[in-house]
Structure formats: structure tokens, C-alpha cells
Length: 149
Image (cartoon, rainbow, N blue to C red; front, side, top):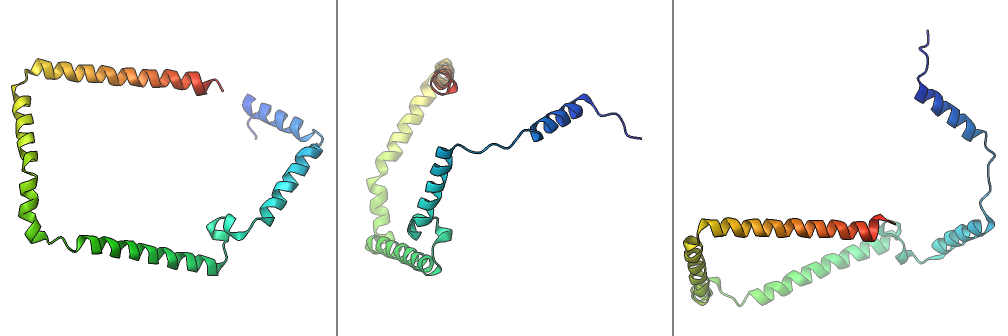
């Protein structure tokens, strides 16, 4: 035996039957004309204005070959620029020029170790409060500008 249908199923069937009994409506003439004009414009557009999958096969192949060629040209240009740099000769000079970075980090760590922990925790609390405030302001601005639309 069939179990009695629940209320939601009966309501769904009632709405479905009511909608199916409605007569079909024609689109307004202006909408139909606009849609047909858009379809004709899309069909009349040149092939390069359509997506890559709709390009002719020859054009796709030429595009891919040209892309690979430009990539190879860019890599060769980078190699030409980097080639004069001899890593073994420049290594010591490079680290000598950048020795100030080591001194900067050593000074920063010395200052950080001398700070009281209460100041560090206070600064983290202030930064957290600023982050939450920024989040709240952003949410309020979003609701004001976009949620009402």
C-alpha cells in the first residue's frame, strides 16, 4: 500500500499542476528583436573575437608556436643578461656589499631582547584590536554600499 503523501509533497504537486496549467506566454517583441540582433552580431563577429576553442586550427597552431617562441626569446634574453655575472667571482663581493644586512638584524634582535614582555604583549593586543576594527569597518562599509542593492 502507498503511504499517504506528506504535506510538502502535496504542496509541491499542487504548485506544479497550477504552473503547468498556465498558458504559454510570448516574449515581448522588443526582447525578441534584441535577442535575435545579439545572436546575429555574435555570428557576424570575426573569429579572433571568439574564444580560443572556436579559432581555426591553423590560427591556434600559429598562436601556440608564436607563444613558445616568445617564451624562448625571453629566456634567452634573461640568460644573456645573467651570463656576465660569474657566480664564483661575484660571490664574495656580493656578500661584502650586503654585510650591513647582518648588522641590521643583529641590532634588531638586540633591541627586541631588551624590550619588556609586557610591551610586546601590549603591542600585539593593540595590533589585534586594530585588525578587528579594520574588519568591522570593512563589514559596515560593505553592508552600507552593497548589501542594500
